[in-house]
Length: 221
Length: 246
Image 1: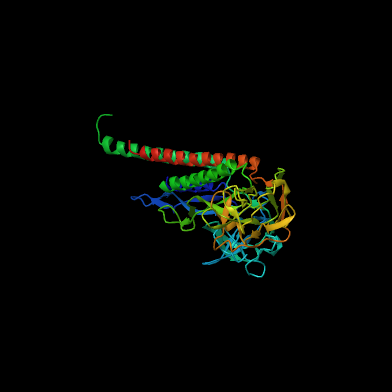
Image 2: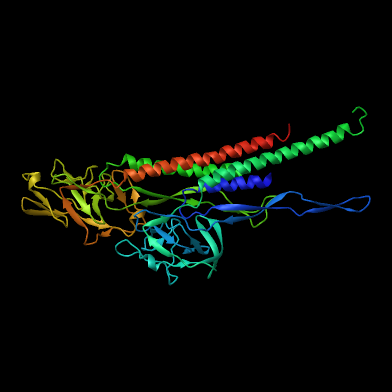
């Protein structure tokens, strides 16, 4: 039941971010706890194994690129294909697929958090006199083990990734959110029913124990 | 479980704020020189493991929030009005004006008038900067405003409307009355690019696109609704948990 609660929390996060540009949906994977090997305490013969429950082992992020929608704003950027924009933050280089950029007082391209976006030479990207940025100047990086850290930022190890080629940046467009409302609704119902089933199991065990406590040793049938 | 409730309510709040921004855009769909708001969303911090049934590899998000990215400064349509005191700006830049409280400000609202003392004033009662005075006996039809902003009254040069621009218009602060003031992050006002022209007898209309605003509104409302379902489900699950002890 606890595992289903976590799943539910994660679906709530997906739904909350269903309008967040460049957001990637998540899935939780579950696995049973280590099994106990039961043996007959009198004869020592093996009875079989018994599981002790389920745990959430991992949350998997679906990094598939999502549909790109045109916005017409010159500082909106989207990546067509795989890869991430590199951003220089106070905590080091972070990556993002959310291309809602703006300019700072020095005319650099910055994220909504005010952190400069890095170009191909690993230097902040300057905005041209016409208020536009050539999307080819932006660095699109492939990441190994990407992981979300909030504020639309992602950490990971830059480098080649098997089966991926770095996509191209495009100006005047944004990537949509990867949260799928239909999927989330179905998952939510499924998770709630599994939770309900967990409660029924507790009830049944309770009844069995109740029988054991009150009926064993009773002479009346 | 309670985390799920809070995650979903953060998402709902963000959609509500988006709706407020869209409502403001729609309310200003007929405001001269209005620029629509640019809002986006961002996810919040991620929580790692930390629960009895969770391994440390599992991470859990905590919702979404709204991010204000200033405004879309794309050009609004220029509409011919025929009024010689109306000016529309074609291209990047702003008219330099002085607000009634004495602050210097920028505006794209070119609905100008002449006050009782012959001075050129904006629709919100501020003056163009530097001040321009039209001589007493000149009729409005005798006033001509050139592409560069030079104001000629009955053939005589009386001043020039100043066009300025800033490095980062997204960081200008709106002060109401269609006016913006510069901030540290927007940069100081500098001369507008030479390509920017003034067109006399026209007004720039609002760049709110009603069809975009309507779709944004529907999207925000539906997402709000969907996220509220997550709260409902969390509530039902808590009820189930309550039912464990009969």
